[in-house]
Figure 1: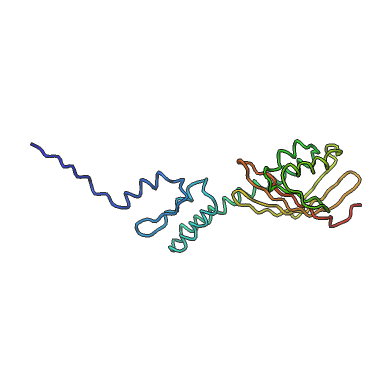
Figure 2: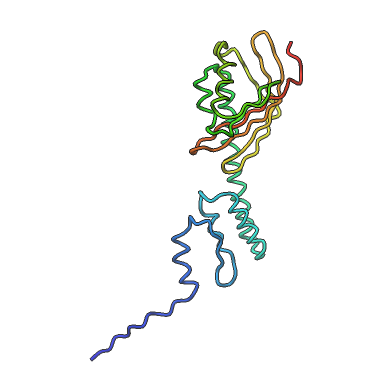
Length: 209
């Protein structure tokens, strides 16, 4: 009678780790290989946050894995660039809504929440989406579409995954008047869409003529 062996082939610790690691490429967890090297799986997942990638980067540097550190640094820069372009586009949509003179367009770009704020030039802070939208209705109520033309100068953009801000100088042409306003616009990604949650316009740095 032939006796079959019921023993299983020896499996190394590295092999035991390989399966779960492949199955969890979307995990944000930091892992080590048996020899102490960082897996750096977060870099392979498009949904992993910059914060997690930065944590992976610090781990790779601590392990002196400079090749992985370089890849993680590139991944971080790519993600930041994508967010930066998205925030820049959201800033454009905000000014497009303002120039349209339509409250409906402004409603589409203003975020939700009590943390939404606006400081119009020379005015105090208005907080809460409902109150912020009331202020825009008051401004746009008697403005004909296209009455405001806004050009931007000295535009600077900073962005992370779900938060970013833009500083700029608004060059405003309102038919018979013209002026310059320093503005800070803060954006938040809400439901996958970048929306403005704070607009702060300084008093004009040059008189309207």
